[in-house]
Length: 350
Image (cartoon, rainbow, N blue to C red):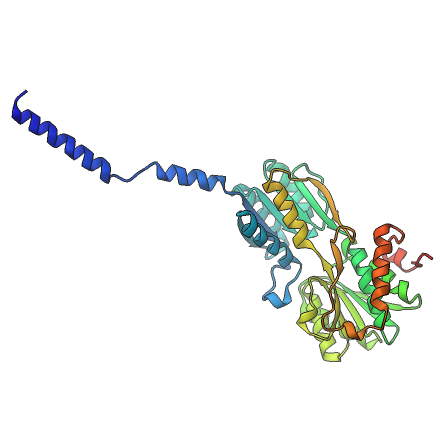
């Protein structure tokens, strides 16, 4: 082989080495793609309530979103939020998240019942979580709460604090779920004062703040001095009315005592964030629990707020009595009614 041929071959070899070194490394893209596919993804959907406008007025849906943010921070999962504008959005929103490959799809609120019943069987590999309702499918975790137990305690606080012997209850949409709040409240009030008068009314929705305020003002005008609202954002109107009339409101789901300090007597706490996080963590760890999981007083699922601003307003010894009632509920000695009919005839066991 002559020298010219050696030179040509050497130049070709050098050019090949240079081109190879400068070429982009194509193997990185598939690796990154595989990593993305391995990311555990969780979506949360809200019903018509949506998220609150600020941290100070957190509501029911915000608790679910808190659970997803906790899962993102502690488990490293990818999260997203999709809020409904109308009831017709619920089913397509569930389908959208399942089609996009989310491992877990959370529907916060009983309004998801029909939509999730229709969608979950179509996506057997997707895990679904529904809050406040029961859907019997093998890939759905149904998280329910003993709202009547927490409401019993705030009803007892309301009756023990009332100066007029009349208290009020405001619900949102009439349903078996909201009736549990009302029934527990009435029974708890009767446990303290068997002659208590409880005024009840419903706004027909969970979003109309003005309607909540108007109904609360009506009940104040009828002699109530404490009003408990289990009505979503309508309850913000109850708190506005309490501040306006220098009377008391009772918050719900989250600790709403700080919205109007001194005018929110207490709040019935519902630990949605605990329940949803536990369900997500189980799915992430491969231990997803389908079926019904109940969060009651014994499980720490419900309770009442620490009453940072109003504890001094309640009569001496009342909270000790309320806490003793809580222990009797946990032991099973007191069975809190879940219907208004039962609550209206409730008698505290001796």
